[in-house]
Length: 304
Image (cartoon, rainbow, N blue to C red; front, top):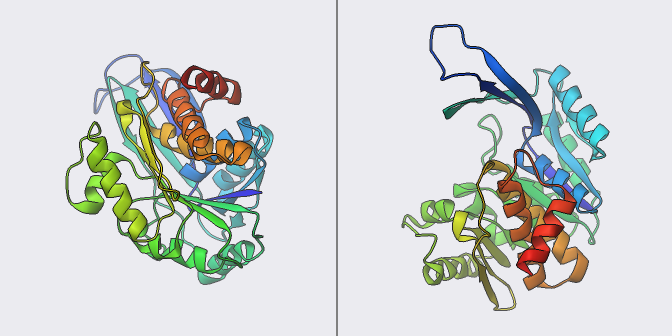
């Protein structure tokens, strides 16, 4: 079983205006849409489309939390959230009118008992399971929460996949995560050195340094330049992204993580997992929302 953690799930409300946004005036909507957001939840939805059984973990609160949980269940996703006693899960507004603007809500408070409830769920995982921890830790939670989650796992043989950035990423490297997935911008922030996405040699060297600090496999997403993978077996794979019009850069990285996991579980081959990850990331980048399993596998056949 694959488990994903999203510390602060959200409802992402997309508002498309007829014209340019005019502050202080009446603005009329052309259309709207909403999605259940959060990086781990995105991973869960893409895994589901690829036929990988998984369960979404994390914290939900209030009427919005109930809608997130019920909505994911309607889509076929399994959930096992900790229900918070106070507040409401976030509603994030994405305003699309020429330039895109975002208004992101703050996360509900989580008390010690509720944190322990999440740790208790993690203590029930088995050595055959995979745990995906994706996204930033909210400001109202401990900075080293990801490390705490890993420490509560019952075995160090559980494969942990982490998609986060900054100090939170550095802090979990000594736990030898199975996979980390920074993008080239996050890699630049980690090393305080600008990496051009076309500089595969420099990016591969930086990925190797992250391996020296503990990561087993490092997958770096490179926007239009594709992706690069450095494996624990000493292999390096790099491919350019297929050509297309990018419509959704947010969910593509999460899709890449899901595709990699699905590919690895299917064939236990790093190169194939890498191509499936690139296919999933690209397929989601070219549409609004997240790509379906059929769309990802079609892209995989083109890349293969």
